[in-house]
Length: 267
Image 1: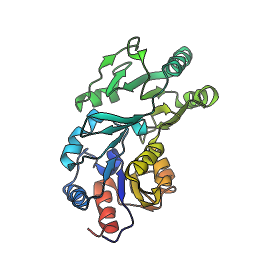
Image 2: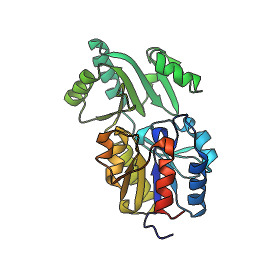
Image 3: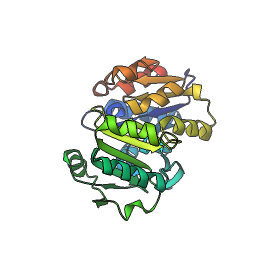
Image 4: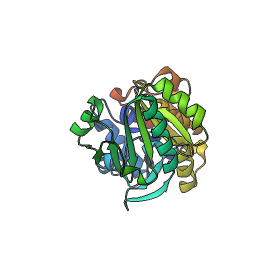
């Protein structure tokens, strides 16, 4: 191996997975080759730990996973949280009060401790249920909001919600769109995010950021793509993502991650 890169960090949906949420045979063989080369492959996703177990087993990964868009790093071997940046419950309650009073939200979700709560079952939530990810609670979260949260996801008047976040919560929260349609706004603790999680991974493996390659396709990947030695945007990503990356891979439907990794590591 002639590559300077020592760690691979990869987004899941729209990046490593094809549009059917599957890992292609070529991608699987590529990751298997990296495993044999002792190159750590880290999944960095908006999903909860419970929602990536199948892929971790298929890829035979025993590395930590970046979940909830960086709010939590999970040890998959021990099923333990390695580190987390939670949203303080007092901030959560204040935000809920403001948004509900202004009637600016159509739906909102909350994640914590590998569980999620949702206010109402809409079309998107039903798709998640059909995919095997049912919520643990439905309706106003009177009991769910008794502890800090990993993340909030809000659907509604996003322009208004962003103004509220910028005006009243900028010191405590960050936000990004969790889907390419820019329908769901994801809200995290200010100290969270994929970029912050990548820094933790670099320290964990004692590897400089310049020796990490990362792949992503969405706005929530930009921070980590800009941070590492090689940030790779997928061919199916938006122009805003591609402009912030070092290079552009083929699309997720055309095994873009596998194609690029084979070139980097001479597989």
